Length: 337
Image 1 (cartoon, rainbow, N blue to C red):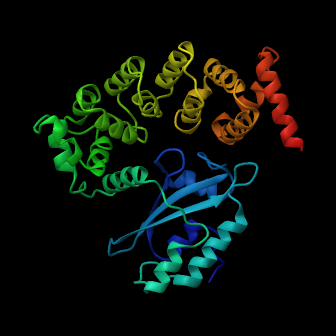
Image 2: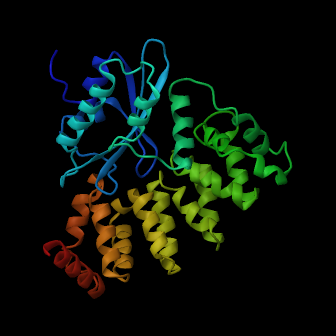
Image 3: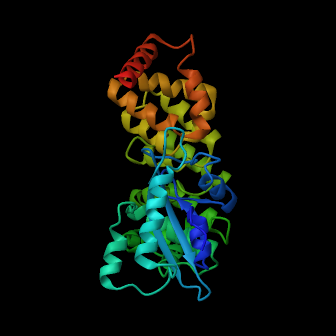
């Protein structure tokens, strides 16, 4: 048997089909061609977080019984998968399961698989959205919570019933915004439902492509709310770069680019930082906070392939402020030490 050097090869050799999802910054599907390039070390991992690629592998055999692995693999300084840890992960699976990845495991084997050094546990919110996305992509029915959530959002149930609405049901609706009247229901709920429901919907929307009508509601809510909803409405705009730029500009004009908001932008709204003016606004706002925070945030976003070149050019911009110049100087000093 030929040596197995990639996860794709490993899963194919085991006669399974598979799909890959990123669970780092946002829950999103990675198509097979992109994943093949990542595995061949021909392309950096597109959504790095804290120096790692955090992925979910969904695979199944002819019986169509589905299995999921959550794995976190380190990246090198170029953002490429580090080959040695990947090989270690594959060898560990081979040692534990052989080539029958879908066989029934003993309790001891299950425990070993659950606690291997490359495993990670996603948040409950991400798990719910991931479950909803996988069910839709694989043509399976939504969860048992879906119908009740739809009834609630459509106004068939009184508003005070909100504690009985499951987060999984809301996630099922948000990944199906293009079906039935879900887009209209969500847009209305973001304006009229109790705050708890609005926040839960935003936690789901941050992982999907938000349609124009809902984007407008989110921008209006961001402008009008002065409570905890503001940051959640911003996060929910993550898939829409132009709307994120508009939101960040609004918050900057109101001098509301707090540490929490800046972390949110880096973690969910990073697409907005491809815009020159928005990126400059972000870096200038970042520069007024403590040096360690600046260093940490810059290191996080400069690792994102879509931003790397623009950010490296930005730190050499002769028109930057004195505060940003000092922050960049501190960054270089910390890098050399």
